[in-house]
Image (cartoon, rainbow, N blue to C red; front, side, top):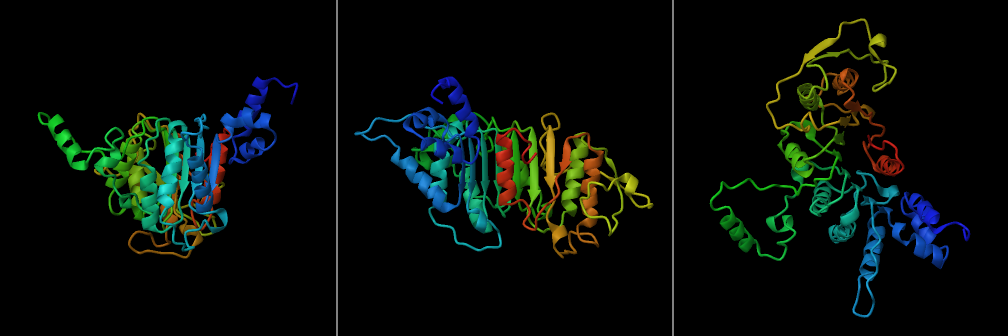
Amino acid sequence: METCPVELQLLIFSFACTDDGSAGRSLSLVSRAFYQLSYPYQWSSLAIRGYPQAVAFAKLLYSLQPTPFSPPRVPRAIHNLFVSTRPAQAAYDHIIVEPPLSWVGVLCSILRYAAPTLKTLSIVCFESSADCAAILSHALRVRYPALTELTIRGRCMIRRFPRPTPIEEGASDDNMPVDDRRQSDELEDSEQEEDKPRTWQPIPTLRRLHIACTFQGMTLGTHAEHTFISELAPELTHLRLSVLDLWGSKRIAEILHAECAESGMVDPLLEVWPSRPETPLHDPSSSRSSAPAQDPDVQIAKRVNWDRVLPSAGSLELFVFQPPPTEFLDFYCSCCMDVRGDRDVMRVFEALARGSDGRFLLVPCRTREGYGFSEALADWLGRMNGLQGCW
């Protein structure tokens, strides 16, 4: 490497540090020259697995803060960040572990450091519903001026996210008492009609959003999902929903069919071929030519009279949907499933994918846990290396 130009070495380091952070750590241990040359790229991509790693990294960030006796150092930029609340061996929802009380504080300290340069962020939680909601909600209160792709995963509903308080929403008024800030806002808007406050701080640069959570079949309405998506990502072009709960998807199929038809993705008249017991669900080889001889059921899209989940048709380039893992379990709910569980409902999703104009993509569920740690980490690494990832 002594004869290799410095510019070429920097280019090599920038490409090498697109993994989970292992390359950056290794380069920093080669020599002092390698440490100095690779310094700006060492934290370009980081994967933090579990609380112990998060605490260790937060302590490292704290130790690098300037003091009166040490000159400030140039901060290392973080462009891609993956955070899991648990290590791989314990990253399962059915394993009950009480999270440390300081988890939220540790996570937010890391996110605040990374936020100015962060482009892709993936946060996967495996705690209880309330803890997942709290962790994800606090993570979304940090301002991300450059974030373009976000994945959040937790076995909780969006409507259960604790709403940010007024003092948490503002950056310039963080030190202003809540009462004083409210009085200031009232004076400013005294001659105007009071606008409805936003629930979520918008991320104008966000283009790709992946939500993996529980939806309870959207039987409780879509207002929470509509508010979350429209306010958080006003310029969204790619949206993915991954269903984690075993609630039936009958209502979800109706909502997606109606909204996709209104957006021009599919025809309002949808031909749904009856399922065959011997045909595996989500089998790519199953098509209209291999369908049974029975006539297909024709489903007509309903009129959208609810808060839309999907963004407007003009901005959305791709919508990806992953159904719940009901096919792996002997599970049946008479309220929201057909006679054969979700099998007939899954045929609706398959018909949507077959008849779409290319903007609707159905991703089969691969495990009993639904979208989990291994899949999330592989998607995150794939995106950094130019692959489709979760898209």
